[in-house]
Amino acid sequence: MNATALQFDSELTRSTAMPASRVLRAYLTEAKYESVRMLRTPAFAIPFLGLPVMLFLLIGVVLFGDAIRNDPNASKFVFAAFAVLGVMGPGMFGFGMALAIEREQGLLKLKRAFPMPPPAYLVAKMLMAMLFGVIVMITMIAAALTAGNLPLTPGQSLKVTVICVLGTLPFSAIGMLIGSLASGRSSIAYVNVIYQVMMHLSGLFYPLPKFLQTIAPVWPTHHLQQLVLSATGAPSRGSATIHVAVLAAMTLLFTLFAVRRLARVG
Image 1 (tube, rainbow, N blue to C red):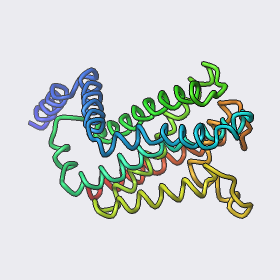
Image 2: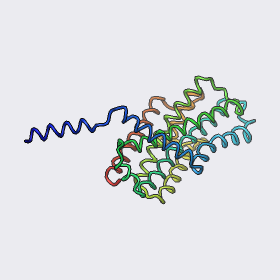
Image 3: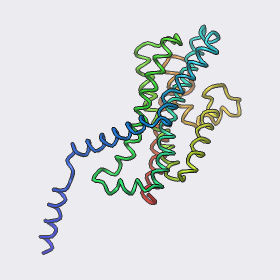
Image 4: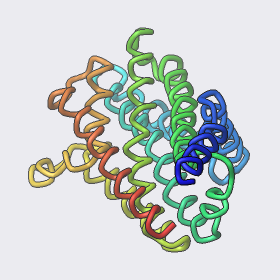
């Protein structure tokens, strides 16, 4: 009797298991609709796709273009700063606010009832942030090569794009952790505060005083900016291996904390 029941359970498990192709299609479908949803949301798409390149053109070309045009390193520094700024937002705000609001509305509980892999919801948001990063970098590099006269080779442009697109992941992990902890209303404030602190205390746009330079490596913006500067051929600080290791560790650590929190409280 027990052997028969065990055999029936194993056969039922094998019959109901999703093939790998269907699992992959479930991930891609969830990512597709999440990306389309965010691209069709003007309040999200317009600021994060348009603001970085517009600020780069305004500050790096119109206002201070003459001052930095004769210094390739200065132009690369400005480009790196706005490139990092462009990939910060989609991950932090797309996760931080959206996840908190959807969690409060019970969307995560509804997703669990769907015949889809449980991680697909979070993976879709990460892929959405990476897609926004691709679009941001295409517009940034096009503006830098034309209006900004930035001396980037095709190889450097591709390298910078790959670094920045992958650089969305630690910010997505930070946003995920905020969204798993904060309420829908408070998440907006938390994301904005952390966003502004990282932007200013990491030396993203201007040199920091000595007492703040020692804590700059705490922020992922510092490590990503150094990688971008190195890829463009501008002077950078620290080892690329260390920067990559720190960003990967931050991504893993914040993601694990967020997933554990979501698994406990939903």
